[in-house]
Amino acid sequence: MTTASASLHLPLNADNVWQLVGGFLSLPDWLPFIASSEAGEGGRLRILTTDTGDVIVERLETFDNRARTYTYSIAQGPFAVTDYLATLQVNGISEHETEVVWSGRFTAQGICEAEAQALFQGIYEGGLTALDNHFKTAP
Image 1 (cartoon, rainbow, N blue to C red):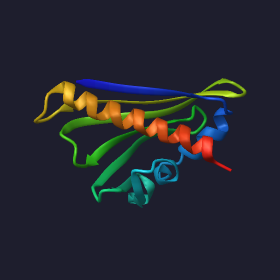
Image 2: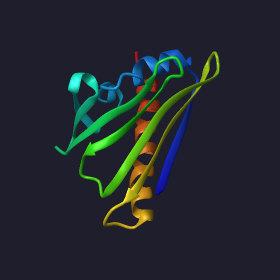
Image 3: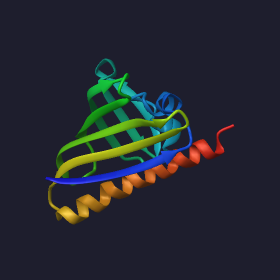
């Protein structure tokens, strides 16, 4: 099993950050490479379309609004991994400081573990950079 993780500190209240990222279907609101997110199975699935046309189907595994976290798995996608499970968590450090952590574990399939790790490390880091940019440019 391989893991990847990225974190971001924001000078914002955790509840405000969670309001944006906590919605399971909200990725297009802050992640530019996700063009659309549609619900399936009563909201337990999100069918994502990337800006390059790839389709990724993710299943919500756990959701805890109070702890500001959710976990999800990949049911279908273009990635050479299996047993994927990721967590997005928003932690309040203080009233005006928040840490966002995006992490996952998975098994490489057809590629080496280092390639799989680098792929998801890049996705998480790129995603959190996009989140940071969203808040810097938000009106």
